[in-house]
Every structure is written in structure tokens, then in C-alpha cells.
Length: 343
Ligand code: F6P
Image 1 (tube, protein in one colour):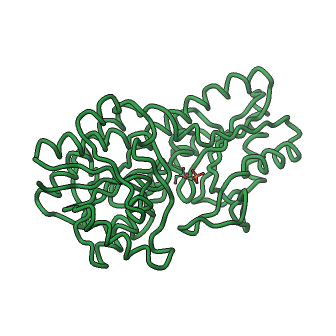
Image 2 (cartoon, helix red, strand yellow):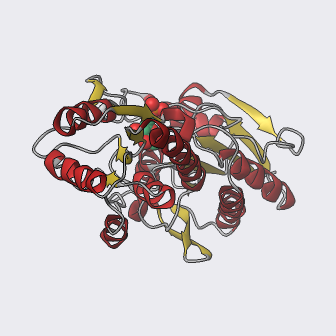
Image 3 (spheres, protein in one colour):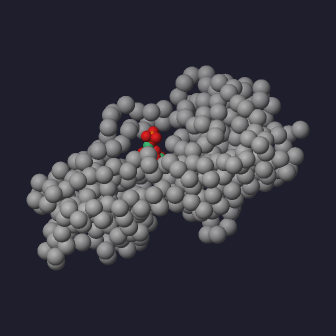
């Protein structure tokens, strides 16, 4: 019997369990055995697995997180780990691997395909929605709706107290969450990594708004946004296995400057991992399910080295290498639409 392995790597997001369920259900229908690999690439390095069957995936569709666990392990970081991955792939008697992840996890998958482990297909996930070659990644819609709801809640308290509230949302290199949650939640300023922050301009927008009688404002800022001429604000300088620093703190920094320059009382709310937790939206459940089914179809048709992707309303496949070439930053036309509502 042929065997498919599946792993989930990198930051988790709502929608991973629907993908796992879909790979298992479609895989079983097609006559495959499915092996769950624990904690991303770590499970392949350490040969840490458990069998997946119809019972293990029963009831997981609405659950956030991933029943497989995840990690930010990069086998290309430690000498000998790539060899361990190849050896364990054989030991596990895998015919194919489904790698579910973002730029880092799929970057490893693309390298492995080149380095002698060709039977891999990718499934794109990330709340940041910054993967190229797919219109959307699952996880984004849930994070966006959580952020929008938080912005709605911040509105009511900001209005009662006549305050400015800065909402810091996730988004390392791309401001999709900030931008779309800002539009959906009616933010008065939206700040994204793609456009350096001019604090004077932000304060002018707020002052003008207050001059027309408003006594509160909501500023949405992506954690990866940067002040003009300076670096990203980080919590610590330590890099993870993929060379990323831990972001966070831009909201606090910005709130201080706004209060000092405008004289308006300002608070900050960091949404953080709340955006990554909890039950996936219907959109993410359906997208994850479609991606999982398509991944098994790719394996069945031996279309390895590809990633499933959303193009318009169709699920297609694209070369893994194309997906990890460049990050998909925000569409500036959409940012221009958000700007119409600034102030
Ligand atoms: O890449 C997804 C993401 O949620 C980023 O927006 C954020 O910078 C990062 O992961 C946070 O990662 P961690 O879970 O390691 O704090």
C-alpha cells in the first residue's frame, strides 16, 4: 500500500486541521495510508510520527491549531539534518509528503525537491497572506475577522473615553491583516510594513479628525511596520532558525509619540496570537479542505514539486519554487482605498 506523510510547519493558523482531515479522507478514498509527522520538519529529522485514520481526524474540522503540532525547525540550519530527513523519509516508507506551511516551511520543501527528495507537494498557509502564487492562504480570513472584531470593540471604548487607541496586529513583511482589518473595521489610520511611517503625517490626520469634532481615533499598525529611516521594532534580537527576529513593540512606541505630539490620551492594544488561535472561519475551512483534496490529487497524478494554490475561484497547482521566490506584499491600490477613509 502506498503511503503519504503530512507535516505542518512554522507558525500555526486556523485551517490546518481542515487540511489534515481532507488529506486523510481523500487519501484513504484513493487507497493510501497516511502518516502524521509531528512538529513540522522536526518530526522528519527525529522520525516522530503517528498513523492518521478516519477516527484520528474525526471532529477536527472546526478546531484551531494543528493536531500534528508544529515547530520552526529548519533542517538546512544544522549539519546532518537534511541527511536525517532523507533517511527517515525512507524509514517511514513514504511515497510522498504533503508539507503544509508558509515561506519558511515551503522554502525547505522547494530545496529538498532540488536536493534529491522530489516527491513533495506543498500547501500554503499563513495568517500573513504573504505567499506568492496563490490569491489567498488559509488562516488569513480567520485572523482578519478576529482583528476586525477587536477593532470594533476598541472603537466603543475609545469613543467613551475620548481616546486614541493604537491596535497592533500581526504582519511581518506584509500588511494584509492591518490593511483589510483596517478597512473592514473603519480604522482612521492604517500603517503597514510596505510604507514607512511618518509620525507627523499620522498626527496631522488625527488632529484634523479631532478638529472636525471627533474625540477618538483608531490607528491600526502592523507589527512589521517601520518608522521612516529606522528598523523594525523588535522584542529581542535573537534570530530563529529561519533568520527572523521576534517582532512587537511598534504599537507602544507609536502610541507614546502620538500622545506626546497631539496631547490626546492614547492607549495601545496588541492583538498578538489571539489572531492565530481559535476556530477557522467557513472560508478557511473550505479553502483548507479544497487544498487538502487537491494535494492528494497532485500526488495521485505524480505532479510533485508543486504547491496547491487559489487562483480566482479555482484551485490550481504552481511550482513550489514560484511560491517561495518573492513575498506577496499588499496591493497598493487597496491601500489607496483605505486612505480614502483616513482621518
Ligand atoms: O508568520 C506568521 C506570524 O504570525 C507573523 O505575523 C508573526 O510575526 C510571527 O508569525 C509570530 O511568530 P511566533 O509564533 O513565533 O511568535
